[in-house]
Length: 103
Image 1 (cartoon, one colour):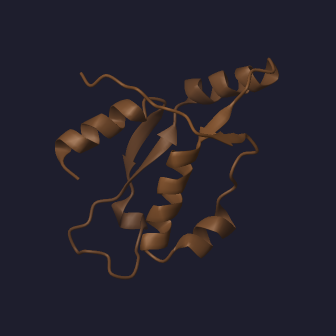
Image 2: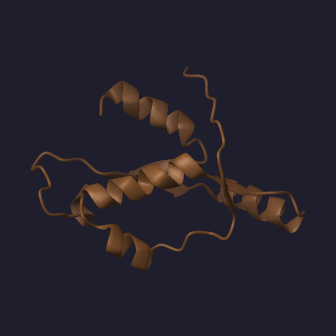
């Protein structure tokens, strides 16, 4: 992934803060120069979600996003651990289009 790709991902993940977790993650076949990030939800994003749910607004998970996450864990042979440790929220999974403008 290039710096430009990462910048686009930061825009896409605007409700999250990027955190370097390289030192905490290992997997079979991991390249020695591999850098691993995760995105942690912003407090204000969680509050908006909770408010939406409390007000009965529909909340959905983008189907292609969930598939990409699952594909990534499958590629590193960690899908069993992902399934065991990750609770997928009970929101509807839908085909959604994401549109963003790069700065």
